[in-house]
Amino acid sequence: MMFSRRALLLVPTSLWAQGDDDAVRADRVWRWPRDHGAHPGARNEWWYATGWLEPPADAPPIGFQMTFFRHRTGLAASLPGRFAPRQLLFAHAALSDVGAQRHWQLQRLQRWSGDEAARDVHARRTDTDVRLGPWWLRRSGDSPGGRYDSEVGGAHAAFKLTLQLQATQPVLLQGQGGHSRKGPLPQQASHYYSLPHLRVRARVERDARPLALQGHAWLDHEWSDEYMPPGAVGWDWFGINLDDGGALMGFRLRRADGSSLWSGGTHRSADGRVRTFDDGELRFTPQRSWTSPATQARYPVHWQLATPAGTFDLRALMDAQELDGRSSNGAVYWEGLSDLLDARGRRVGRGYLEMTGYVKPLAM
Image (cartoon, rainbow, N blue to C red; front, side):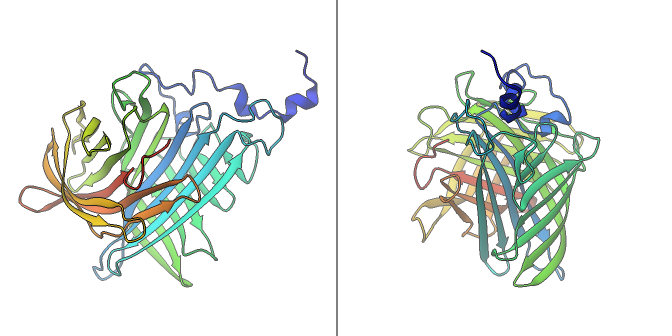
């Protein structure tokens, strides 16, 4: 078939390079900074930063979540033009003020043709550079970690959050060399890496009162074609910056009866040794639950975790941290700042707990 030069110019450049570079496979050779960027041939992808900010005078922390999602729709692949909805980009943001026991959330949705040259809406392949109008996330620096800058919210929103996240540790490849199994079949997997112990500088604007704060964060980047195996209704996940400088991540895919269908995780010790958890080596046991007055979903906000790195309690610092994303990606989930405690009740880490599929089965 012959194409005119004009027709070629209307096809987004990213559509010409969605082959093996985006495929999820066990033998992936990682390339930096390219793999910090988007993989638009994969069905789902997200860049996920969670952390906490430390107000002055030893006040309780303020938790934050900032997430950019990309979803390949499978539609309009042969249609030219910038308005063809080949991809959807979403973004969620939330603040948890533990002292005030207040939780604020924001979300945004825009369609994207796949054209990486588009200025206002894009997810570029060369490095992390995701934009939905005035919301954006961008990485810079020569090292595999580098620095992330982001801005979400705005003057007419519940808040505006400006973040600078500086890597202090190497990239942590999850699973086996960054290939993270999510079920018994080979295709039920993702490519997944984390950056724990990010150093944070932030500006929080609420009610025209800006606050300049510092804190700590954890960033995940993950993409997949088939994330949830049949029978899974959602997942439970945690990412914890350990107080000794180590990092602990764990997840499980959950059936409707609350049992685990598949699990995994990673512990990186303070001296850099990495232990990957096989399916079945991580156990979640609920201890206390909270019922959302908005959705009536019942979320375990205190878990006992049995891991190859030890047995811990994971406790939310406030109960009401549910995010209703039904006007963007359709999901309602609980995502909240939590402390990790050892057997004596001493804090050994802090991070975020995420729980999905408690309102209804999650559809990816």
